[in-house]
Image (cartoon, rainbow, N blue to C red; front, side, top):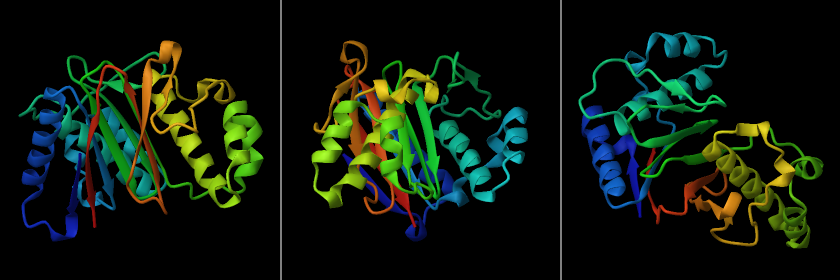
Length: 243
């Protein structure tokens, strides 16, 4: 299920928007589904007042305004979508072994941002990963194949029509990132050892096929999005906000 909203056309207050998003998120989790919010050019929704001191200091270290804004917006999304309703104090995160943030006693979540896109995924399971990629500095993807792709993935890309190979590489990269973020390992893993099943629509990956990959539609010409879900989670509800 996909909900789309145009930020520039909204007549409701920011608070009402977040309340609506939380209702959709809670309904999805209550039905055993995951939830993903994908925001495009939504910097006006970022709220630094929701940041704990450590995150406020981290935000100040970003050199690029967009990166700083995306960081704050991601934290804002977690505040409104994941924390207990009515929580008012700044959101203080805990971190896993590999640095993945979580909130004790709350639903599992994951954040991603690239260029003007920011995404947050929430799951009723114990882990979830989401990756959004605009690939603004990709260069020649063929130079990256040997270092980043599994032999089976390289075969699928090589056998595809020439005009489809770049899109397949982008899908491959984004799927891998989603898997590594779901497991909490990040890019510390060997990318070539992971096969994300490029020939399949929703492949199962990981030890004992513990994760299912779902590619999300946002803006195929500008961004690639993938979510890694536990197989016990039957689906995902997507909410998109854009100007």
